[in-house]
Length: 116
Length: 157
Image (tube, rainbow over all chains, first blue to last red; front, side, top):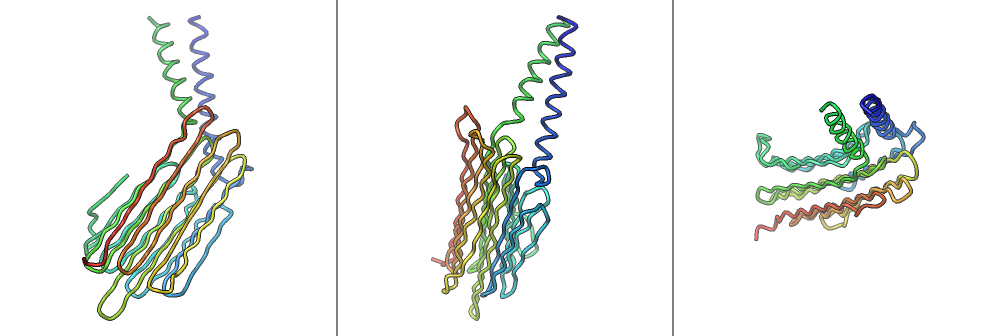
């Protein structure tokens, strides 16, 4: 029994490690799985729509007239978006089951609020 | 003693390995304003097994005595090793200093393992709203959900 336990532990840890690699590779559409992302931004009558079936980094951006918004699709499938209006702004990041947000409410860009 | 220690380590390893398939859902949001200028954002992400779905959006409005401007951005992302993943995003202008946006993302691995997320946003010159709902499910477990709702009043009332 004493001899079996270390081998069982080793095999188990190897199985865990293999699973982690499998999970990681599945985030790429090249592994045979499927991935998709889409983003859209609009401002003053101009709308840009970007749809990506791959995992390429895409940025769409609209600005002018005192407000500006953007969405970025990152290679790992996560997304980030930000909007500024005057001297204030917000930024949201989400992906892989986690999210966080920053809020800027001063002209000097000081972060006054951060949530996870 | 060594046997006990090995069994304890084995138990911890089993729990750690089992946790790799855990389902999770998270949302967050924020907003702020100064006078008639404000911004808002909301986003969320869900994951279960090899599936993951993420949506988010931000928007803002700035009104001065001379002009009013609104902007917004919204997007979604989904992926899975097996099964299907899909996203839809749209952001339309209302014609009266407003934007309406919606993003949906869902990934279905099959066998009861899935993740999905939705974000809605409304941008007006006097009010900003954004909300996100993210859900994930794994076989034999209750679905996990997370919701976020943000609202910023720019009416000055």
